[in-house]
Length: 153
Image 1 (tube, helix red, strand yellow):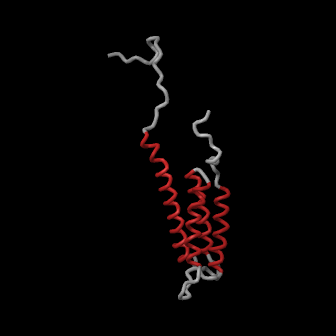
Image 2 (image 1 turned 45 degrees about the vertical axis):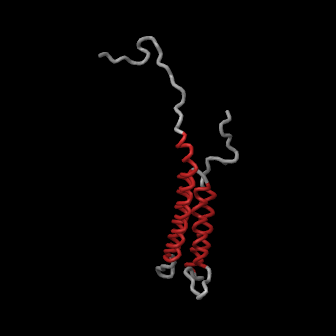
């Protein structure tokens, strides 16, 4: 048996058109994206709950845990925005963090607060708002979905 290379016999191999994906993959795209954004929202809620209970560690009067949480609150949404390819990937976990953190900072009927109005609480809440806004702003976007031309040349 002899192996021939394409084009060796003088006949060019036939080129096929672009390979189309199965229809089922196209139908699953929005569901997978929705599930991914739902998980990002839950990730933001988890960050808010864990951070709400663990932000008040001090070392010599410095709220080191609150400052460390600011680094985490920048890194996670920024990384998720980069992985998802747009600002929405950064915004969704930020919204989850906002929802859970500000509920934990609200005064309950019994008068209890999880995030108190002390130095670490202020750094965690207000600093968190700032770093989350910066993370969303500096995340590069692949373009607006409103301005894309689907199927047009």
